[in-house]
Image (cartoon, rainbow, N blue to C red; front, top):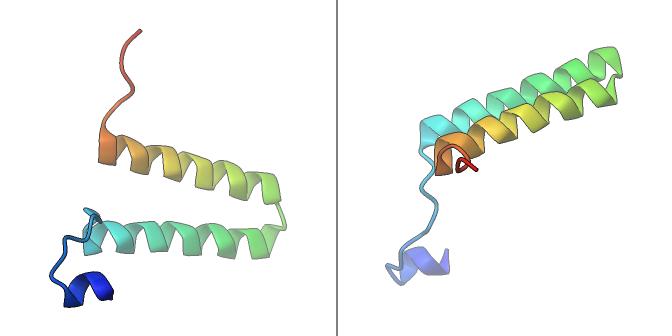
Length: 64
């Protein structure tokens, strides 16, 4: 919290709503993992969620 006390810019552009969505995705994936014991499915789901998050934050990849 040093940055907050010194009024420095915190470089996190993620909104609270976006964090809530990401937290819900992680929670759902972990619950599914606990029920199914399917690690690969969990990793695949989280990989897709991460790719979607990056697309929203930095835009689509450049065209070749």
